[in-house]
Length: 114
Image (cartoon, rainbow, N blue to C red; front, side, top):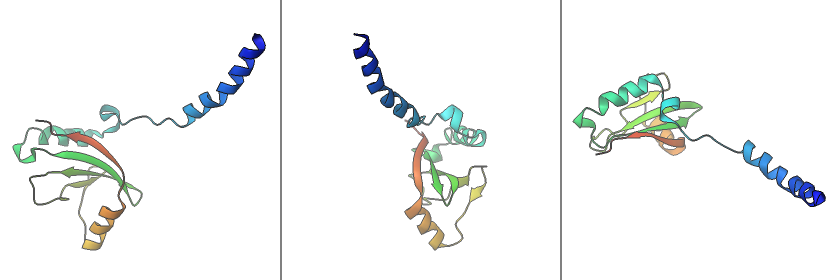
């Protein structure tokens, strides 16, 4: 019986080790959202002009960017910030198109819920 338990534990050991190495912590709003962005979200959540807004986090050109998407606005990407809270603006259409085509790792940070 001890031999069966020993062999069984040897068979399951690789699975336990693999599962620990491959775990990724899910996004946590309180832990992973910068203070400046939480303040921005607090202010937009009280402003009807931002009704239906969503905040996304992306990686683009080895930089973390936050996009505030406002569905009722005609300016689809006018609120884009770097991780320090500095507003980003595209200098030309080529950069804008590159952002749209190559942004990665989209995470929904927050959305206006009615």
